[in-house]
Image (cartoon, rainbow, N blue to C red; front, top):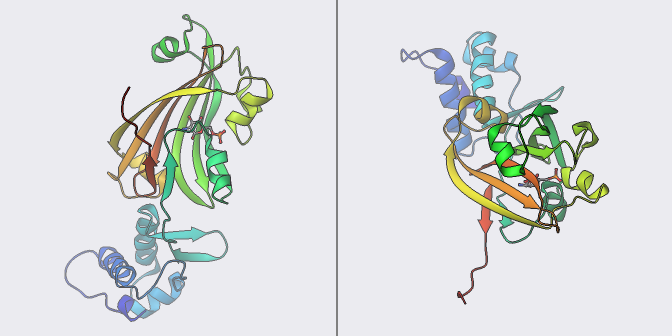
Length: 245
Ligand code: GLP
């Protein structure tokens, strides 16, 4: 960690210099994915700066996804992201997609409640004014890496209590005979704002893919309207193309 000692007096705020040094050390492979960072106290002593300065630099790097903090065990260089290759022609759920890769899917709930349908939701789900919907907003996490933010809307006539969804939405829908069998998706490119970037642990402005999915029951009724934001550094979407006709 000699690089950390090299916090010079070049005029830039000290925490920015330390941040740059840590980033450099990661880039040059002096500290690799999964390596533990020395304690705040040790870095402060080595670089002869205050612990507050160290904390500020480390917190910035956690926000931008360079470092990860694990409760109780310290700060580590973020593990290298393995890209997820996702088929665009199979109607699967996040939980199923991750299970197939041997990863454990988990969600952090951002919102889960009953609301009056918005005009967009009314149009997509074929509802009339004042009808209710269940909204489920989640940060989707696989093996402790945040991969996507998903905001799903289901008509409250199908899902009257969003708390029935504990882990998988599709599993909960399947239990009541409402598993979708067909979906239409629109993919567009977006740059992340600050709040979403923080949730996904990537720098603000990072490239992401926004996917809107409208899914249908066998009867043709729309069952789900979901807007998802997938990390651009984590996902490849793959589709098989055939000659028309
Ligand atoms: C995918 C889709 C979403 C869908 C979700 C269900 O991520 N993009 O439209 O709502 O899967 O996942 P789960 O059943 O794991 O909650």
